[in-house]
Image 1 (cartoon, rainbow over the protein chains, first blue to last red):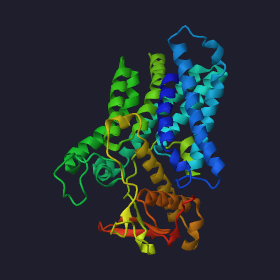
Image 2: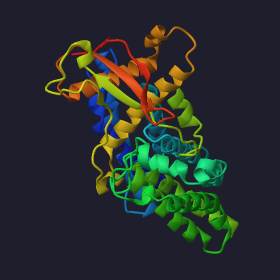
Image 3: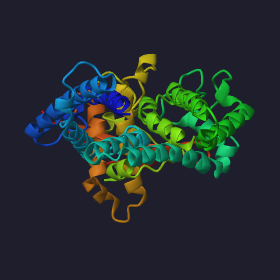
Image 4: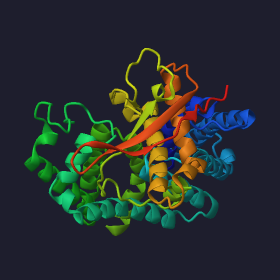
Length: 256
Length: 144
């Protein structure tokens, strides 16, 4: 889980570095103090270094490489504490989350990795993470199920036609219907897709109780997240949830 | 700090509640300044960049746009629950955030003026776009 999480955070860090002009004078989140702006941008590089360090040590330990890994292990809790502090600094500075749920999950995953490093209680942390992930699917599915506009496909039509998400042009139809027919203009198809989404989200946690059910869960979840990226451009959800899948696998092994 | 609250307590309500999506419009012309050679008085801000497969890994511009939209949502939430005089809303941090977004957008358009206005529009029940909020003429938040 640590390697997958560090990889997800590395990608997120590259994105924040790409946004650094927004924290400089003239940018959206530039503060009045130039030195503080520079310190904030410096911290984005520091965050990248921390992640490279974490990834190096975690990979070396995982693959048991011939590397003096154990002399660095004691530094890992400090590195993760630094990562948590960095995420809080970024959120307080911007008061914005590009992908709310993904940022929230990444935060809790970091907290749990820090918990493992400081207390050694691996089981409790992994079970907590897996419950967090499984509940995310179930709650999202049940909340959609409770909404009539989701059950009849109208909500999905709205998201595909009028939302501010970046929808591929061959899926999006203008609200005046001036585009050629596409999946988002077909009411029956939208209803079927809506019900399939709800069913998948509600059923995902239940697959863990089946023999070999984890692999069904993994394939369905990956397809679901990649589709979300393809249609809504939500890339951070893919990596945040994938980072938590080792914990789900751990829970699956405990069940069976 | 709504973002901090959402970070610590994610709601897992992804896409469950559908509502009409507000749109942020900006004008430099309304304040008497020409927006380069652009003849439109209002233009839509926060437009997405083209989709690319490698955005699966790093999608800086799209996530930046979504972060800015989150600032806009925070302002709209404050606006909806605002009890006092609407002219006092300028003191809100989220209002200043939207103002900064507009300034940064105008900067991208090589805008040479010093003032701007922004408005938030939303489709009404009849489908027509109607103004939800129109700002006063504001100075650009450029700190050069």
